[in-house]
Image (cartoon, rainbow, N blue to C red; front, side, top):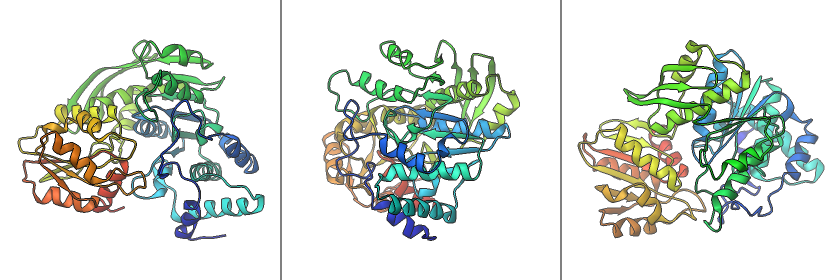
Length: 437
């Protein structure tokens, strides 16, 4: 079996990867050949590592990665060992699998993938890229004996590879416009797919408040539903130096003046979901000092992350309409820009460049540098630039992400702000250039 991660990753990359497929992943309401059968067979052969400990399962159109990180930080602060599985990664595949915030080592990841390669050769079966990396996470978490698994859904929920696990707590942050063609009642279709992570024994922590969607989630069969606004919320969510100052109400108590070192009011809302989920997991309120310490240590790379000053450079992986609107609102509320606003933007199909730029309020930018994300699904930089130019914004075309960021920074003064956004692939490539992994 291979011990070198480069070779193990090459083997993994030889499998179907919906994240990188030119046609993109299937949309809500159409399974597109998706099934849990292969994943169920794989974990059965592995001895069901997904059952090794309790699971907190997190889905949602936006905010699920940040919420999963917050949940993990709070649980780890209690002294338990937490295995966290996230997707996608920004720079290195190891980021997806971590134990108490520390990514799996190259050696361990290569070995676990090598075991899966050997197993696949023995059984003659073929799994997808995401099924295999998910199985690797389960296997490693069982091996290192974590006390809790926090799993972020990769796509939707019902047919996601992570859904072979039965969640003690199922978390839904929100429902928005991703993995949809906007036909019919697309919000209900997305909600139905995300509700698929709820199991009979699950406590559902429901962040979505659309009354038209509530019957879908209440009909999913959870043992209990804890609902935003009714049972929990961020009663105070104010700008503070370096983040947000929060008062968080849960079914058990009010946690006051909690500092969260993340930018954007949406992160305060994510914090309310995370805290409610951890309380539900333990079945009791948490110590207030523990909550303060847990949130204070949260870091979310690529989500309104400041990576350079003079000029100020921010990375944000907003990649759908709601995420782009949140990015524009966060820029307006949390940052005072006395100079120019420069956007470095790239995106993946099937995004509509004009719609995404509108949501980013790109028409107010002083300069847009259009780039091409390193993905088969990339929208060419020239198409993004054409949409930006039609808004009357000065535009440059630089397909290479690193060079696009370099050109934006070279032309910026100390009072200017550079926002790199539109896709996590763009953010990952920019982070490679600015924050080497």
